[in-house]
Image (cartoon, rainbow, N blue to C red; front, side):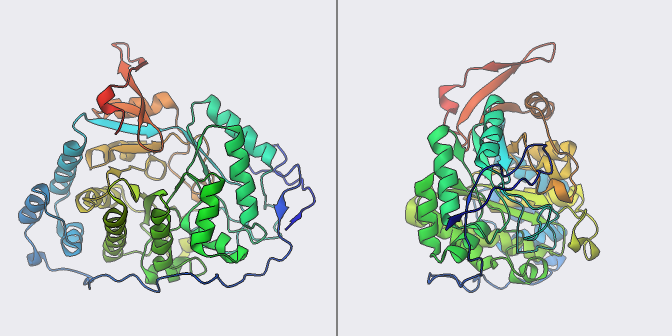
Amino acid sequence: MVLAPAKTDKSPDSDTDVVSSPIRVATDVRAPKLSATRVRTEISLPYLPETLDLQSFSQDALLEAVLSGERLSPEGALWLLQHGDTEAIRSAADQLRLRRFPDNRATFIIDRNINYTNICVIKCSFCAFYRLPGSPEGYRRSMENIFERIDEAIAQGATQIMFQGGHDPELRIEYYEDLFSSVKARYTITLHSLSPSEVHHIARYSRLTIAETLRRLKAAGLDSLPGGGAEILTERVKQAISPLKNSAALWIEIMDEAHRQGLRTTGTMMLGHLDTLKDRVEHLAALRESQDRAHASFGRDSGYRAFIPWTYQPDNTALAVQAPTRATSEDYLRTLAVSRLFFDNVTHIQGSWLTVGRNTGQTSLRYGADDLGSIMLEENVVSAAGVVEKCMTNNAMIELIVEAGRVPARRDTTYRLLETYNVGDDGAFTPAPVPESAIAY
């Protein structure tokens, strides 16, 4: 590990030099094999047919069983996606949401997604953000630049920072330890950062096991692990859209290891590209089984805090040749609603206004979602592939939630309520005390 000479590449969204001081990078950038570690080679799930006949299930019986507390089977979830009535699915999902959250709140968070580098060697076909090593558009942010962004975020009420970036072959574990420990020494803020695919990359290039990589990242300040890099957790889709990235089985194994080490996580899904409805259900089933393992071993205060589906964005991507269009709003909302019905062991379902737009994001609150994620002080990865909306103000988020007939509340990473809001006759929003009964949400 050496100190690299300072660079003066410009950030694509700023006039500030991205790397204005030396950073620790590696001189040997060959891709080594991953150090010995326990890794699954496949996700073991019961057989699921590609399609189910209309007569295979009764919609009323399926939904009544779920509402009475029975677990929805993968076959039942697939049948609902293929044949279920949208309004019936929506109504059942909303009932489950209201039972779990009888105060009728919808939460959001203020955070900033800081992309520490866009240099990447994985070449996912759905990504328009990455630049290969040597590209004049590639960058690594300096610590000064990162601190500036965190200062701006905190000034706007942020309680969480997401560090996410490319799979940069020059960055080893020491870079991330320096980054996290420096941030933690300077700020009291939650680091909900990286992704299983980045963890795999760090482990591989640092010649570490997954377990040791996570242990060191956690010791340096990592608080929780987002679910990026999942896309669709079937090997067929993984090989089609991101063959150089970790397998579906390894993604799950990394999350299982994070849970073993006491890190909370989130599960995600990127839908609407080369995936089938069967693929989506197998993805949900893999996450649910992973959550079952966490709860069985470490209690219910472990594992995935939330499930977050979003839609693939085709603009400026190589995948657009095969998948040129986005999922429809109905397709997205049906999938989200079925996820609420399916996940009896994941508390929070998050709507994604960023990729589907404010109107559909707002509508997701009627389809089982209890949270709308972040107002997004900064987001560059999905935005590079085209998004319906890119940013939102605190007041705009509150207004969106109020218009949906829900009670707005700002939260932190743990879903602890930080602030609720009163809405005046003139439409103005004023902070209100958080009820003691609502502090643990």
